[in-house]
Each structure stands twice: as C-alpha cells, then as structure tokens.
Image (cartoon, rainbow, N blue to C red):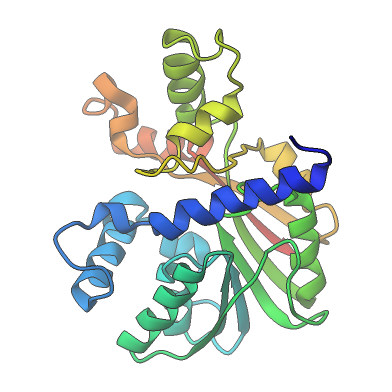
Length: 275
C-alpha cells in the first residue's frame, strides 16, 4: 500500500526505467540488424529523419549550436544527440536508464564522436547552475512525475541567454482525440470502465512487449507555454503527423494542406525557450 506521494513517484520512475531498459526508444523500427551495429544505428537514423519526422533536423536545429555546451535530458539511444555532436556541439547526455547510457556511449564510439554520458534523473540534474548553453529534451519530460520541476532544473543549469528545446506530447492533436479518446476511450469503452486518458496512453502510446506502462501526459500549447514561465522568451510550435493518421483521407489531401494540419494538430509540441 502506498503511504505517501514519494512512493508513488518512485514507482512511476521505476516503470519508465523498465520501459526503456527493455525497449530502447526507436529500436522497434529496425529488426533486420543487431542492436549496437553500425548498420542498426544507420537504419534507426534513416527511419527517424526520412520517414517518421523529416521536419526534425531543421526545427530542432541540429547544426545551429556549434561550439555550444549542450545537454540532452533523456538521451535514449543517442540518435538526436549524435546529430548535435556532428553539428559541432560539445555534448553531454543523461538518462534514467543504464542501458540507454551504455548504448549512447557505444554509438558515439562507433561514429568517432566525443561526448560525456551519465546516469541521472532529469528532476535532479547533477550539474552546477549555468553549466550549459543549450538543454535539449525530446519526448521525455511528459513521462516524469514532476514535469514542472524538471523544467525548473533545465532553467537552473542554463546560462543566461541559453536555450532550452523541449518536445512534449500535444493534447489538441489528431492522435490524442481520435486514437486515445475516440477509438480507445469511447469505441472500445475504456473510459466507461474507469480508465483515465493517461492510463489509456500508458498502455498504447509507448511501444512495449513488457507491460511496463510508463506515465504519459499531454499538454496544450497554452499549458506548455505556462510550464516555461521562468524563461524570458518562449516560442511554441506544433509538428509531427504521418499521412496514415488521416486514414481514408490520406491520399486525397494535398501536401500544402497536410503541412498546415501537421502544424496545428500534430502530436508534438516543441518549445524553444531562452533564459
């Protein structure tokens, strides 16, 4: 029995750790190569930036921070962090999952890039105030119990004038309202059986063969902006949609309309905040 909130928070983090220890983020899309080989990493990268999210290199600015000291909170397999390193950033990656830290370190070695990697909790960063020029986190902070506290930590470790780039899941997305609320919540009756949208997402949003069911949260543009109220300048944009989400309309909607939809009801809220 849970006797206080601390126990609940630790269990949430344990579930997240179990999720990505068993299923490293992005690995499910590459089955034909052994994890850890150069061919495997090449295929993960190709899928991420050519098929799933071709907008990402430009929006995230992988080549815009040459010479900057950059921290990624929740580095996963190091896919994005490697792009920043190639762009000239001096990279540090942290993750709650030991396996992710190990894979990222190995990946940098495979490609001859340098970086620092350590096991750490994004809610309690082990760095001094104003240690970094850039802090990046993609698809991570909506899984941590104290998202606002974690963003406060990003603010703390950023130097004055530094930039935070963070992706969170979008509440007002097509994916959330059609897949989570309509299809699973209403048509499959999960909402009527007492499950919350967060509980439904924990079962279906993150791929898992192991039933870890990590915490998953979503944010509107306004809610995302509010989380970054400590920062001096905050820009919020929406991205990420694949045509298959449009189902029967996927082949008839023209590309310019599809891009507009993607930027209004896409699955990702991307926040760029300057301290």
